[in-house]
Image 1 (cartoon, helix red, strand yellow):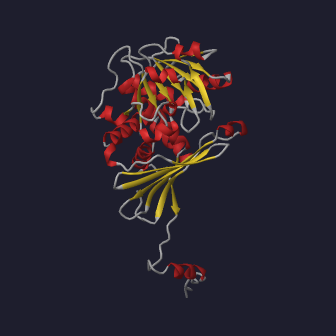
Image 2 (image 1 turned 90 degrees about the vertical axis):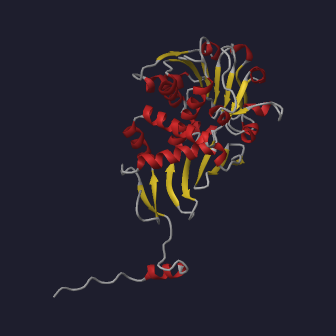
Image 3 (image 1 turned 180 degrees about the vertical axis):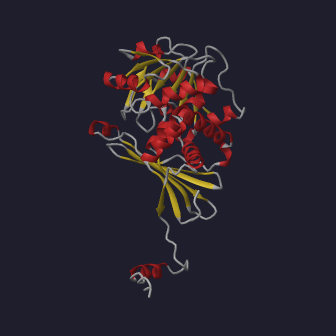
Length: 355
């Protein structure tokens, strides 16, 4: 991207928004989904560990690292549901890609917007393998910051055109409808979760409260439905009644992390689940029958962030939509770091006088 290896390109929030608009949000989601699927298909190449989480009464701060042996990536992200009441984002994040060969960063990027995009893209990738064929109607329970991204990803990748929206705050549903106006959806605001799921082929739950919640009860879920459970993403936070899990075939990103943070924290540690990469590579079946209930228990995993950063690195090249950060010390002699400080104190040489 730039010839000086000591300068790190940084994609700011402003540049990320401009990049999304430059590419087009549906195209961005579709291309990002391809990057996610490509990396899931080479899943075994990645270092994998559950994210490193620091929990408090107010929320959680996490580091999410991974590497494919050539490139290292990590994301710093928080989750603080109370932030919405204080005018802040529930989730804020940034990420870094580095060259494994020399350890130097090659990209730094905002990831609050990018995380919303990669979460929606990953949900739609999973649904391509798990949702009933021809699914066109989706219920979205929880109409906060993620809802529009989910709708657009499912529209772009699966052809979903009918949306049924519910949120305990009607203003959130109104916001979602307003933002999606003119994008080809038939949108119905609903007065309850029960009303929202009626007739839906896909049910997306994407609520924010950090608590053991029951957004969906067993009687709301009929045969043949695909559930995209996005909101449960930390210990002590769930959205689905346990009985739904017992009736469903459950698919996850990385089982050791999902058992700590996902809906399956309600189940025994040996309850069978299938990692999504195995479906993508043909090592395990996805949807097998019209009446099967499939559940994608999504908590987000570092490989998805790696895919998103890799996509941004590739797409931002040549656009000028980044800043150059002077982040890495570059002494004339690599062993003389202190001398570099001393030389910075010397006054600049006076310009030569012209007779």
